[in-house]
Image (cartoon, rainbow, N blue to C red):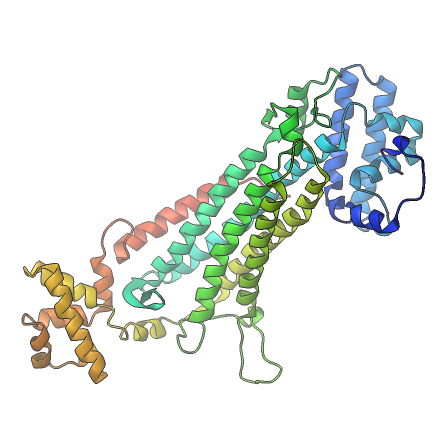
Length: 469
């Protein structure tokens, strides 16, 4: 069955092109949206006196019967061959109802139909992604609350920098995924616009009440330009960006945890449920779950890049190129949602080794900045203090010793003001962290406030997030 055959002579079509052009294998995921939109549209045609009451009842009933069949037969699409999901629905409906099914398409196009269904999918997909993000946010806060005061090395350039609290480190990722949640909210609002009634590109000549149709389908507003909305896929790009940004954050978290779980660090240990071994090396415990998240981020970014490239040269209005949007969209949503859920489980089940983190703070001269700042408090200009401490670090490096091991007399060669107070500053990463007592800092008091604030944010998100479908 073709929805457009009248213009053609009926000659045999190239089977390669048939296979090349079909989208049913992908857009069958939209089946319930297709049935829902068609039912709403049929009722609107009835209100516009385009369909009789009898025709309306039969069409709505027939679409509902298809919906029940699809929901009770998970393999409903197996073995089916249609150009797209819309064609399959009309063919099935005509098989059930006969010629009246041909009135289903009155005044509408697959262009406004698929745009409407894709927007409905995006709104539901956002809800699922938000729930997955909440799971990860919850895991980060829960682990942070279990380890509120443990100190670890903070890094820049992957080199030891300054001591931070482990909970502070986790809360940095909380902030990233909180921003991802906010972006998803904006994406939902962008998609919340009704295309139905725009027809193929010029609108409808039937008296369809688009505001009423928008309300029935749960859209916040009606699209204002039929040319634009039938070819608009900005909202798809926006969700692809949201997924890509979340995957970038997940990839950074995965990279960190993979490094921190290696024996050279040993700060955390992945649960066996999320690790694998080696077919050759018996001792291996590999963080494959983290590596796969990191790898899948590349594919999601590729989906976004491909979609932007697809759109950049399209003339108004609809073009068949847009059929490719759903492959990228479905893959990105599935990947990001599953990765968020998996990351939440990894974080929640990993073992934390505070003693290893504490031991690592003795390396890398993490308190050097604190020494310089203490000298400033004693009246030494910061540039001079910076140089003195730098010389002290070089002296220790050349001799393979730490601040704790340097004799007082040797230390005074570089720091004339060296005394027991400066030694205490140099040898206490806990004191270093405690000194960062500014809003957003890593002191225990500030981190406790951050954890409480994160908990309140999480409670609000759990309350306001829409249920995932």
